[in-house]
Length: 265
Image 1 (cartoon, rainbow, N blue to C red):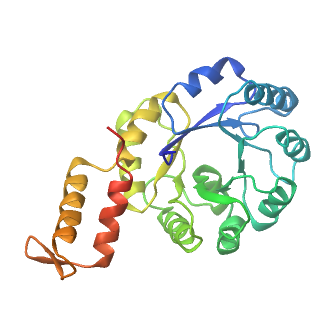
Image 2: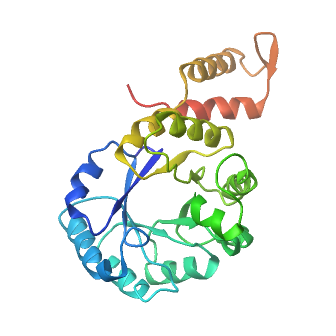
């Protein structure tokens, strides 16, 4: 199964959008029971999402936080379906709570508070955790750091390091809110990828294609990686050289990583 490059949110109280979201080409769809749903619509949203999965649908469910009155009902409902779970405002206690109630379930941690970042090195050891995601908007508000530019780069860098230390997949970058500016999403993807991210959260189907394309290895990267592996195979155990330069183990590992992420023909 391919590692997702794009994660598309769809409100759990809008079942009329579920099929469109599932056919948008995203690596995964996140059925949202949290921020996108009003308090009055929480129960209906949960019922709609459960019906989607019971009818054979796939995806991820973002539940409500451990400090909300809807959390326990969300977790209880998820016992009956096989969906992966996104835990909002992720911190060790909340991750442990979900992992204990749903053992063996793949979890994504949405890190979006200052307290969550302070405990990040503990969070990456949570049972069932597969990937971190950056809740950039909430974190920006909590940290009082304006969103945009490079003000949040330190937080992004920490997510990448923590993911590596925890043996997780490369993290998922946060949302881009500029829906009418196609260059904004491309620019944000380039920046996130340059920092070590491997995917991005999307809030509109139109963002999916540029996100998928932006996180895919470029033709130049693939050509370089193939040349590195060819040089390695032809070296017969001797030191590997390419274009007059020594190719050491980290570069060989990087080349293999690129080729592992090439889309099948």
